[in-house]
Length: 137
Image (cartoon, rainbow, N blue to C red; front, top):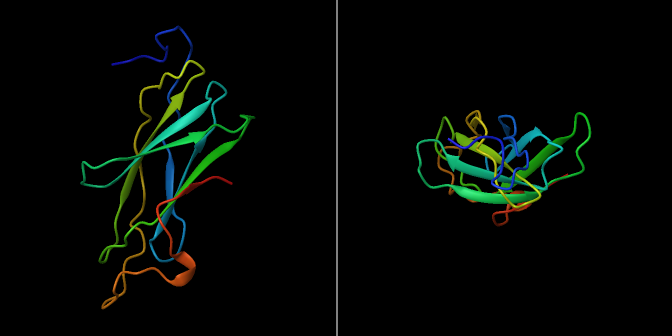
């Protein structure tokens, strides 16, 4: 397994395990947060539905890291499932100044996201509609 040094010798440690939470009351978006690292120029977030091998990969520029800074990535456009709701898993990676990626963090798991009401067509309310997106505060 790869250590915390990049091929060029930079220290590029993996971030802490991310925390995943529903970002809306309908199950169409999720918030992923983790503590910032000083060594990071960017972060890679790998998100998948629990039990699936299909991974969505997002890259987010690193904010200025100060003590206690949290990084957040919001992903929208998810499709809610039947009760008890879908569960998502995310891992994060630090990207160093030389472009190298750290080993992945420990996986973070979401609670079951809100599920579709019985008989629902699975389309988001107008306020929650939209494509897949990633945003930061």
